[in-house]
Length: 271
Image (tube, rainbow, N blue to C red; front, side, top):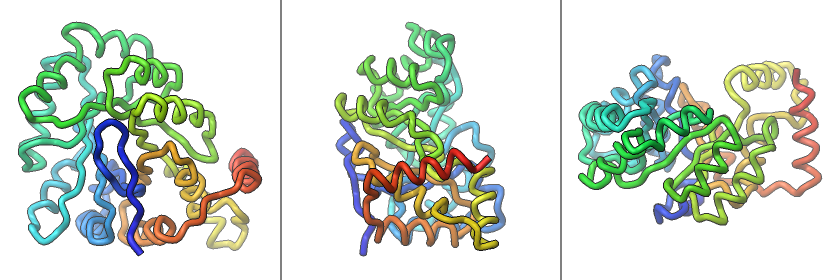
């Protein structure tokens, strides 16, 4: 059974509903094998950033293998200026070894000061738009950790995608996801398993047999059960994590509302 695909909003791209966040992948001695396993199993959406040390370099090395599927690549710039974002795009292209990047995002625009900076005439969005005009970037997105800024980004009509945190630990993003869907903005979900600290605690409880319903598999089911989500990008540094996530994506049954509420309650009680 293949991983189902979903439309990434107005980009028109069909992407697997399960992607991979490659922030920490380079810090593992199994990083290469992790990415290879992901691509071989159909996880062909990879999210990275200029600021993720070694991540674009690792992806570029793996992509040199012509036998592997060509993924949709999403990177990001932390720059707030037009010149800085264009420089980051050019650097990403060289490190990744590609002629164009499918999606380039403004990274962590989570304060109103940051929003004002990137949206200025000489702000980072203008730089990405110039790169798009040059054919170096196909689509433009934004990542936000503040839901009010995310709403403004969606309503601005300037972005093809928005990345937000969403999980049973953070269900507050559901209305923002619904808003994005109404504007045909693709939704990329970061931290679908709650983030590395919470995931480590859960895995410890799993090993001890005390996890109950609060498991990485159920958390991923929770996120994928939302039809407004285009792709979830759990981080992975080891191949076995990819394999486990793929198994969930291939076989999951959408959660009913009572099960979602129970999982949210369990998540709220983790700490």
